[in-house]
Length: 281
Ligand SMILES: Nc1nc2c(ncn2[C@@H]2O[C@H](COP(=O)(O)OP(=O)(O)OP(=O)(O)O)[C@@H](O)[C@H]2O)c(=O)[nH]1
Ligand SMILES: [Mg+2]
Image 1: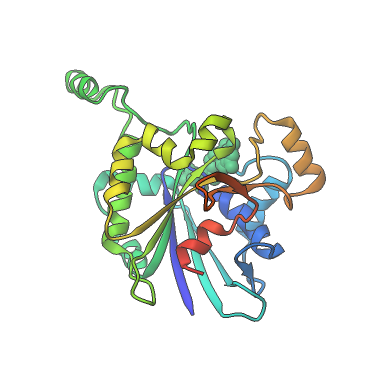
Image 2: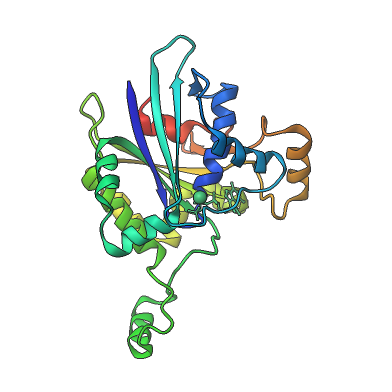
């Protein structure tokens, strides 16, 4: 069986680095999903992983038309049912343009129609984050300045728009259930303990109230929020993390924040969880 999911999010939201990290996780096989067959051509994924192994985050996908597909055959257990999942790494610039235009290209639209789930990325402390300090004053200000200071579409408006694309395009899952969207809050390693304990959902509510409201009353898709850290720290500033990755590799590094049955947010070493949940395996 083949199931595709879409991976989307604005510029600088963590998509590429997740793809580079999730491949070694699928290959190692300790998580919910493992690679059942070695994929034939995944050079770009190995390149991204190499950046991480060398102790650096992989660079952003520069061009709006940059697109690479990561196709991998996975299974939940050894000898179990195999599923081909196709995960496109599309530049955030392209998603931002689509949100601004209010539409995606016909080809992308078709692909989203055939997908049964998605991962929507948003990153803590991204430099690409656009947020007017105050909606009312900034709208008035922009009107006065003739958009001279317009930094573009506010991030949460873009995210709401991307969510709307997903609602109107994604297909129901094989059993007829609603398509699933994993909201992935990346760089979750840089929040303090208090924020971690409240969870990524509370963070979304505080940072992007409009998006949070949409997520609460959304009907056409099932949503679950995850926190993500690809290597368990910030390679740009955390020397201990960087040295450890360089010396010991990625095996014990990186986690996904999930809520347990008691409602406590915990780190789970299984980096495949946001994909496994979205594809329903
Ligand atoms: N601390 C921390 N930072 C991260 C993590 N993942 C990504 N980042 C940061 O986020 C930046 C952007 O990550 P990318 O994976 O390039 O983001 P992207 O969504 O592919 O961006 P575009 O290619 O522009 O669409 C990286 O350069 C890192 O600085 C993480 O797990 N922890
Ligand atoms: Mg990228």
